[in-house]
Length: 218
Image 1 (cartoon, helix red, strand yellow):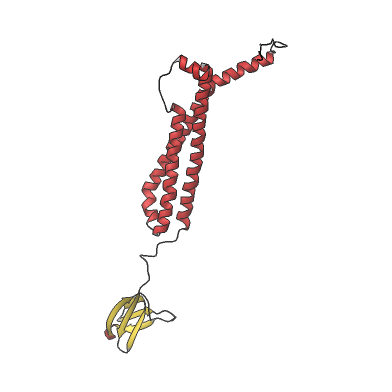
Image 2: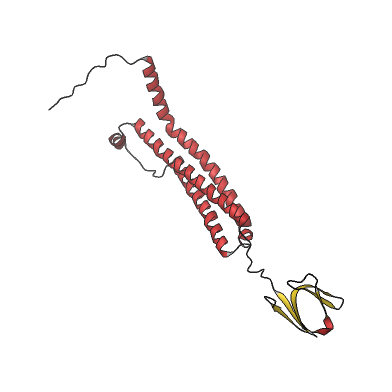
């Protein structure tokens, strides 16, 4: 069985080593406050961002989606709804980084048994908060991507033609029947724009026997 015995270092620590040790100790002691200050900034920005986006969705959302078909409306719902959910999740992570997620009492003995020292415990808290803040940043990037994609879809989605389907007027009159889009009806004359004809068809109102709306002429 090999026995290991401590050995005296060959030289005393230099002034640079001592300064580095003290600087690192100060950096470790301030790390938790630094991370939480950064998390507070992200939280404030995210809160303003979510307020702005949700206000725009509430005011313009229905007008924007009502003009597109059901398939595109579903895509818009997924993109904008997913973006808002990602932003809310990012806000939660930023809040957790700032305030912590498990506020519970602890003892010095528990800190020493798990971390070895109070300084190491603070570093562990700072590392956990930094991880949550990093996740918040990723979620914000995802939210921006989804919302930007939703905006692009609103620009390029084709209008819903369901309520704008073209109809034609079929007119039965003396001498036959005519069909086309109604141009005007004044001066005792009815004018139709028939498909395939450049000049309008002019029909006297006193010769009309029946009018009917049809989806196609022919």
